[in-house]
Length: 151
View 1 (cartoon, rainbow, N blue to C red):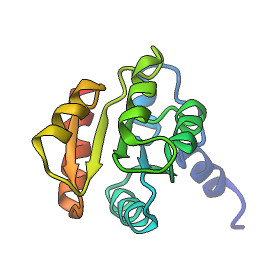
View 2 (view 1 turned 180 degrees about the horizontal axis):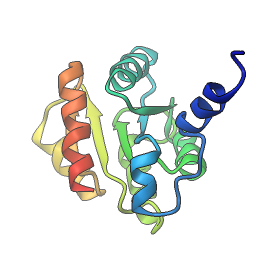
View 3 (view 1 turned 30 degrees about the vertical axis):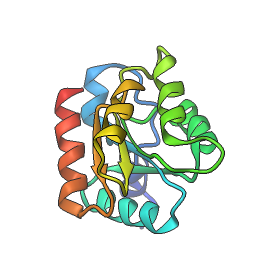
């Protein structure tokens, strides 16, 4: 019978639990990564790379969409594009960081520009790092590993 024990085991392993019971649950629930980018190509690439790395992935296409996903799903790490319509990455990051519940969540800014000004402005609104697009699978997964250890 296929619907017995293995199905219920996989339902628990898929990260559908709340994950709010402290450090023990960190080992039981998958690490959740939110990718905020208005480019479908970037979102899909990041999703594929991160899932291959064993992470749960949430996607948002703009800052407003992202804010509701942050509130509903409490991601462990956020990648945020800078240039987006309606609410840009700097504004999105600043709003997330102003909320005490999410202030400790690492935010990594994504941009096709590699300028010193963009990196500095990202730091000013609370981002921990900066990744230049297009990124490779290794660069993306390395960024997650780096900030997973810090957090």
